[in-house]
Image 1: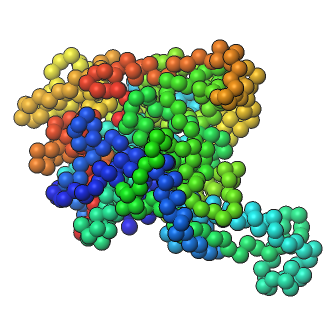
Image 2: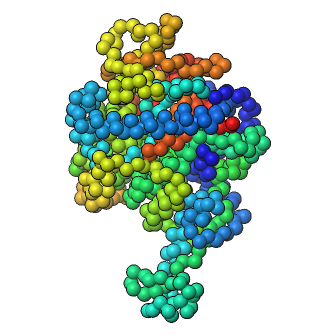
Image 3: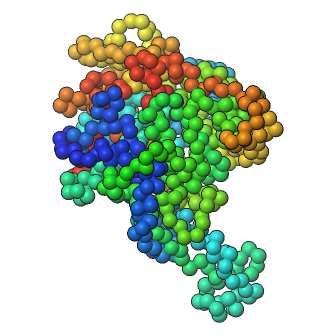
Amino acid sequence: MKRSKYVQLSLAASVALAISGEAAAQEQQRTFQSVEQCVDAEVAADACSNAYVAALAEHRRIAPAYDDKAKCDADFAAGWCQKNSDGRFAPKLGGFKVAQNSEPAQNLDAIANAQMPAGNAEPAQTTQSTTHVSSGGGSSNGWLTGWLIGNAMSNNSRTVYRDRDTRQTYDTSTLNRRIESAPTTRSNSDYTSSRSKPVNVASSTSRGGFGSQSSARSGWGGWGSSSS
Amino acid sequence: MKKIHCAERHDWKQTAESLGFLFHTIDDEPYWDERAYYQFTLAQIENDLEDPTAELHEMCMDLVDRVVHSEELLDRLSIPAPYYDMIRTSWLEGHPHLYGRMDFSYNGTGPAKLLELNYDTPTSLYEAAAFQWGWLEQCIERGMLPRHADQFNSIDTRLHEAFAALKLKRPFYFASMKGSVEDKGTTDYLRLIAEKVGIESRHIDIEDIGLTTDGRFVDLEDRWIPHLFKLHAWEFIFHEPFGAAIADCDTQFFEPAWKAILSNKGALPLLWELHKGHPNLLAAHLDPNPGSAVPKGWVRKPYFSREGANIELQTAEGLIVKEDGPYTDAPFILQEFAPLPKFDDSYTLIGSWVIGDQAAGIGVREDNSLITKDSSRFLPHLILD
């Protein structure tokens, strides 16, 4: 097949939210042993990895730890225990549950029938709520989620980027080091929420330095954008 | 490759609007048009479009590598000298890119001919990646098309992979020009994909981006913008007040600065010089005399132009077709004329997407003119043998 199995169809997150509410009512759970198995079962990759990440975090919190492997094996199946980073032994994660309807947006008929919530056409900050994960799986795991999806998706396919010998890898670039080491805030541009904005902050920031070239060319037969 | 007239889905407008695809009709003219579709064979897709796209993309990457090492070539592309270092660094340090689109003239037989590269700010992404896909899925589901019909379209999957591969840990801002519904559609779509792979995303209008006195790009609340997707061409940024602040800032730009080399039509003569006679390339050279009439069988294009603006051509039979526009302040190229195939009364253009470094799918657009403009219509396609 030369087309995607699943697609981010909705541009309006509010619609996705409305549909997920509908889907939650008829939710069923399925259990998987790995993210790959979950993706292969045609569940959305982000739902799989969100569920896995959440389950793993929960597992680490509640799984018993043993000082030696034999004791652990005795309580679980033989060979099921592994050594943790602290040198103790604990059972592996057995599986994780995912809501069956975690890709509700794929059903176009459902979308056509869904009503837009009145006065709420703004896209929400996140679409995470379209997936149903039993325990947490918050944005702090975003990087791991991304990594899991990347791995699960490239499992059966070529990788999306090619290595180019003549180039450095971005990880070691000066830009990446600048971003990684940068403090999130600086003295004269302290983080401000929209509710409590100190008056002196805006004076140190200039705006309008992007977009002027494109605007100058708009108004010519409708060329209002800078894209092609 | 055939154009096949078909029934529209009775509820497609309602579906489009529910999904937030609001620019399906532009200025009362249809943009999304499913009164017909294009049918390709698998061999046409794989041999004539997918493989050449992948090969041309590699030629483009090789071209960038050559250009960043040559001030002469950077100068030939009219890139301002103060930006040479920034572009060179962005390439040599491997700043990642996300996507690009090649436009082809192709009629189902013979090699597809590369008309241009849209490698910096391509649009028509959502309709190609998502709405077109939904059209096929729903038509199959409703028995309007056979079950074994397929589509060359893994754009969405590849985008998920590309975003996941970036491993971003800080917020990713998506910027488009104020008032452009179409551009906002493109950035919203990319933003939702970023969210899906666990990246925190935010929208900002390009005009609202701020620059602090210590050289940091910030949002309207003066929060740092660590990663920025800008649907705004580098050649504009080079001449805007904030352009000079980019080289030393702590914001990662998408597309990266080295894309300025490929979004420039001056790249087409360079590709031709390096691969003269390549079946997918058209002869092209710098126009020594843009004030003169376009020779028969050639097209004149400005280095920087979008949506068909400032393009002029003369067919082999002597017919002159010309689009006015605002892009008159840069050099022009002359490119061998490869007429777009005509289906009914429309001229058909194929946009072939590259996501990361992979050929990922196509979108078909039609216009009433030999020059494809922003008034073109987007038609779905399928693969059926």
